[in-house]
Length: 330
Image (cartoon, rainbow, N blue to C red; front, side, top):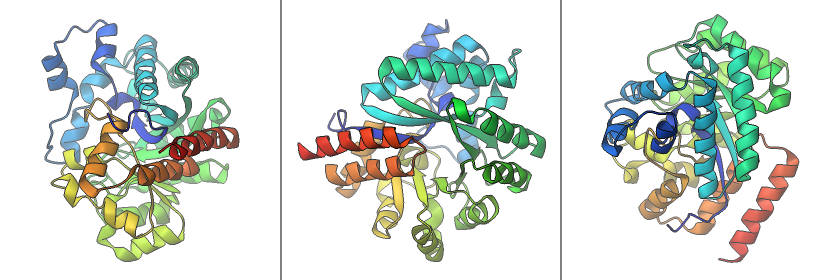
């Protein structure tokens, strides 16, 4: 594959959307490849984001033990390393892993230790983002904010808001985001995916997020696009997922070119390697084929991701040097 060896940065990938067939087998669930696809991979065309999110349920049923979480993270980081991802920010919602006796601190300690071990094993630098979800209560969101701050010195880099933006309000999450911001933490949020530009505006105004997951419908309001550029905000774009959830009918209709041409700072990401069956290399190939983007443009998007990341200065310097060295050989 053309982009397999390119040095990469991935900012938007959900642990619970990345449970591979191999990892499922390691956990003792015996499925044929077809059975795995039927249970863990979303349809090529979902009717909306709600249908897509329902496809995560089989993975969540498995990810309720320390062993399952450890194996899932090991499989995800191994897959990233296999295509030369040098830095990755993984994300998940701790509250979704409490059904078989684990507590929130158990989940956090297990996941952070697994990231440290697997990151070291495969030589991938990682940060962890904690998600609160649109359907959570205010109290649950505040609990995620507390975890974000308590575990900040152990690898947690940000608080995120995820879930079904079209059917749940933003209000229950405002206090949690304020708590993290006022303590000096980082806040990001999904928006402009299932809902339009107004959702992005609301997220910027009420949560003061500095990165937006997706944000692809921002082009419905060019004044918003101008604001995103002026404020230096970053959009984490997941092309295959945007097609799968029905935002765009096919890749040629994606807003990526308009965003890039408008000067928006963007990156490319998988969102969920299992749920949409994509790798980062295949995402690069998809947009390169559709829009004629060169390797140099894709490398610049990786630089965008690196600069927008919550990586340390040491990691940023190391990864940037590897990107520069790769480009010099093109």
